[in-house]
Length: 104
Image (cartoon, rainbow, N blue to C red):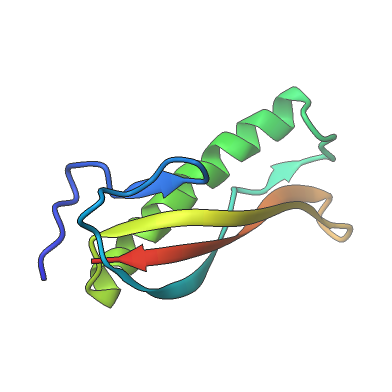
């Protein structure tokens, strides 16, 4: 089945996919933001910058997975976002794990 990637295919939490969508199963996808110098604190400007990039990367990963698995929509049900820090390089980034239901 071909997926129309120009329309809305990723639905977050309370957003629901179209009524005609059929559940195919549950899946998980992980994504990260770019690494930045220094440390970030939850909800500071650097956090927000990394979070925006993480969410854009997650949406792109979900679109890839929808196509790869032959689905049409993804409904993100749960997410865990954690900061990561590399003491050796002094870099910090965000890592997200997203549980979603795949629909056709």
